[in-house]
Structure formats: C-alpha cells, structure tokens
Length: 264
Image 1: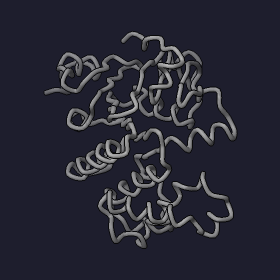
Image 2 (image 1 turned 90 degrees about the horizontal axis):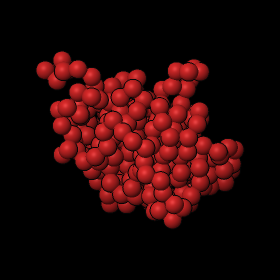
Image 3 (image 1 turned 135 degrees about the vertical axis):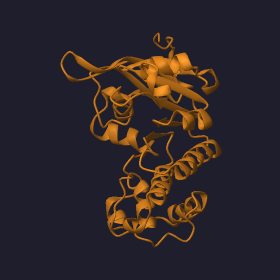
Image 4 (image 1 turned 180 degrees about the horizontal axis):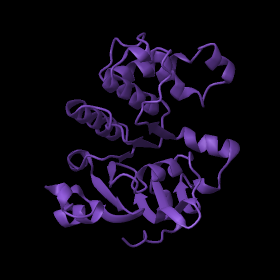
C-alpha cells in the first residue's frame, strides 16, 4: 500500500485524522509499524483487521498517546499528536474517546459514576472528588444509558455487570467525553457472537447519530464487513488493503492473513 497522498493544511483540517509514515519500534531495528499512512474521514466506521501481532493495537495506542511512535506524524485537530506532551497531550486526549478490550471500568463504582468519569477532564478536581458534577452531565449520562440499552442500571456496580453490559458502559463513557473521534481496541474479543453484533451496532449507530468517526481494531472479518464503511487491512506492520468492505476479496484476505488454510 502506498503512502497516503500529501495534504495541504486546509485539506488535513477537513479530516478527522491523518497518519503519515508512522513507525514504531519497541526494539531497535525491529519495527512493529512500518511506515503506516492513512486518512480517517470525519464520519463513518473504519475497521482495522489483520492477524495478531501485526500492529493494530500499537497503531490505536499511538493515536491516543499511550505509546509514543518512533517516527512519523499523527495529525488531529490541527496538531501533530506525536509532538505533544504534558497538558497539551491531556487536552488532545480529552477529544479522543477510547473503548477498551477489557472495559477498563472502575469496578467498585456504579454505572453512573463510571459514565461521569468521562467528564473528569472537564470539571475541577474538587467537584469530581465530591462527585458534584453539573446537572447537564448527569442528564446526558442518563440519556446515554438509554441509548446503549442500560436504562435502570445507573446505580448498579460495575463488578455486577456482564461483559456485554460492561462494554456498553465503556462506549457510553467514551461518548460522555464529547470526543471528536472514538477508538475501539478489540471491543468484541471477549464477547459471544450475539453480544458482539450488538456492541458493533451500538458503536456504528451512536457514531452516526452524533457525527463521530469510529475506528475499530477487530479480528472478526464478517463483523468488519457488516458494520464498517471502510476496511483497513494490515499485515506485517503495514497497510495492505484500504477500501470498502465490498471490495475485500479472498486474495486480499490471503495477503492480510497469509496463506489459504485459515479460509478453509
């Protein structure tokens, strides 16, 4: 896959996210990401597929600042995230909603308290400590609980929820940030097939309703085909397919996953 086309400042600002020549080496000379370039538009659900170890999660973690790339650019909201640190990085991360594979909820807190954690970057520390959130945030949290199918669960502790319910809370918490993009790292890997479809439907629907682009790192090719408006196929730390799910042919899957036996 060739690098993303060069964009001037005006064109880049019209995109949700622009990644250019991104490289990540955990060990010198052994890159996990090998010059990844792609553009994420301001709407739609983008699915990143590929075998384990090909760099999908590393790419997501580079975007949200959990991992610092070795080189390259991540342009988001007019800034290169790679060059940010301290308060500037924290402010940028407020606008990036994150949905985790293992949910990352505070188990001892209630569902409502976990949702309000999505507002921690926007309220003074003392108000958060005393759980004195603005009524607007509380009302919005109740609306989001309805939207993810958890009406009536506000006072339930997180450790009393099923996996699918926890992931619904994780999605609602990410949207509570009022983000400009949502990143989801393997959000269905711990879930049964029926629940996995429900989680992907929620991500797709809420992203579309709120005009928030969603980027999902996912193993399930059929879920990617069903819910994504665009598929990024990665192999060996590189992008080898970038296009609509309808264009994802068997030859592309062989190139992404290697060989033919896995298709049998």
